[in-house]
Figure 1 (cartoon, rainbow, N blue to C red):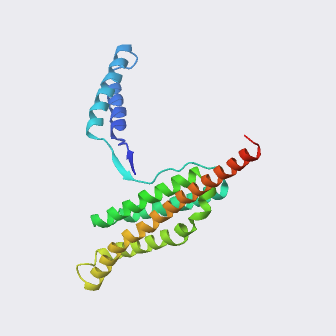
Figure 2 (tube, one colour):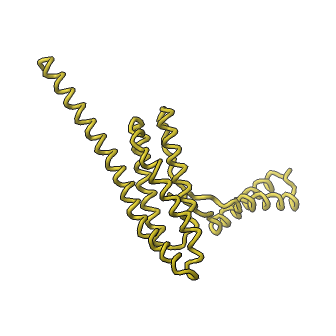
Length: 204
């Protein structure tokens, strides 16, 4: 997920233009005041065309559930995702970055689901206790070794192993997501059976 950061330059230029205009012309004159504002905003919009800001990679803000335990689990997951995102920014290999994007996308789906179904967060221990820490450990090693790959053959081999392992980790995250939906579907099926039994007992 990308977040747009606006450039402060147009605002600074707007203020500087108004200030310079006020040094040359008296702001006590109403028309000079209007002209100062017009010129300042024209300069502002011109600079806004050339200074559009930039985008940073971030993770989604998940909705609060109102359940303190669920919110703690979701916040912990988000912290892991931010750490993975930070490590991604230090990695040069596009294929590895693609695998990281896949992991982050699936993780977002997991915690989106959890934020809508807080009672299911109890099933996320595998992700929090193993999948995320393992992914982060691999990526930390990758970042540490990537600059040395040209010098040492066994480092290049290790980087390749990490690269091929990441898609497997993504599948673990995907399995976690699938199990959440299967569990939810089972709960719905159970609720339907209970309702049907109640209807039968009521003779409806």
